[in-house]
Length: 187
Image (cartoon, rainbow, N blue to C red; front, top):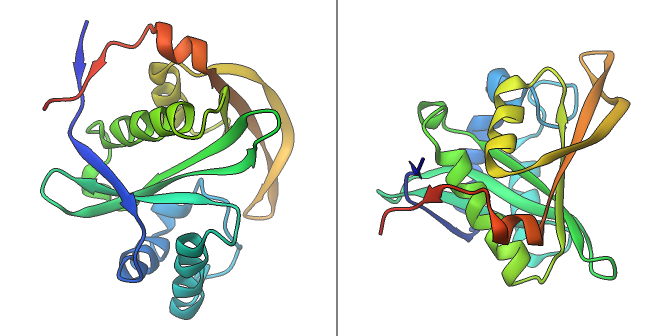
């Protein structure tokens, strides 16, 4: 069965992305499963600008891209971090900050673009991620992309004063090339 994903473009971040990022980080529903400081707001506007600039200058270890929908709207971000060039793997992170795009395939489309970039441009062999075990929607999405469970990272994140377990999942280049991907982006 073919799943048609919405069209997205990944582009380099610009300083203009800071306002959207700052606003999204004020929404506790958006940030619930993101690894952020336990304060409100998690970052000041100035800290957000500084973070965007570090991503732009590639000085923080993140290869982060803005997710743009088919109409040119900035809707979130996706990144590869903890890039291990020797062993050819990296960690994927993603957030759809604009909630009106949740549940409509935009995260899947952005992940597919970033996975393709990681395997083909960066020549990675494995892309892995960590997801909180109670984030069932995300886990379902990752499995649809072909990620497989590697194991549980016990008490891996402190969230609201409580340690929560995270699931480690990964996809290998050979798995990505072979499928079972039934995704097709419209032209």
